[in-house]
Length: 264
Image 1 (cartoon, rainbow, N blue to C red):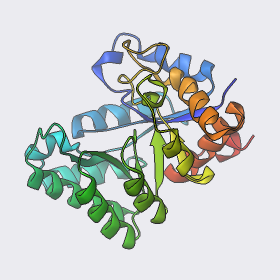
Image 2: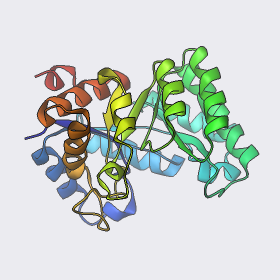
Image 3: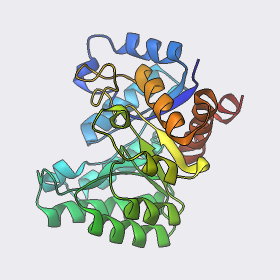
């Protein structure tokens, strides 16, 4: 069995309302040591916090505002809500960042929301979970400034350039890979090999991006083992060893109480 931590799952999404407990059970059975439940909005973060209470020491929550929703970001109310969720145990800020592919929110407002959350991450000494798509120059500039101020982060579900990955890695940040790396169109295993052993994470990004051979179906944390297998093959290492390594990395990055189990 491949041991892993799903470092990014939207487990609070309505797609799981009918069978969420079964999804958690399948994740455990598949080798998951923990699932980080992403709060990509204040409402999702509240639901994520509830799941933490239902599945202690297995589900962990984050809190933030996604760039798609930056137009409605309230710098005062939303930051206070995120602070309150961190006080309740949220382990990271985000998912936040920049998305110039869809441009669901004006770019200037995306930058404002992202900058505010990077500042909050520094103030609260919490890592940040970053979404970036077609916004490499601004992402590099903003994480560079934040990283210089001591903010730690991860580029989640990463498929971008080697340059931006190197910017993040030079800051001591992490890079996370999803089921996209198993798709037939994936052609950048060099990117997977670029990330140092102690900075690589894996994730489901469920309910999205189910890995092959489940592409097109609802994704769930149990399927991360397929992503681990591809990342391990690209790096020329044993999948079980890579799973343990990525679990150890995730526990370190998020400050999870999983270190002893992920070191076993």
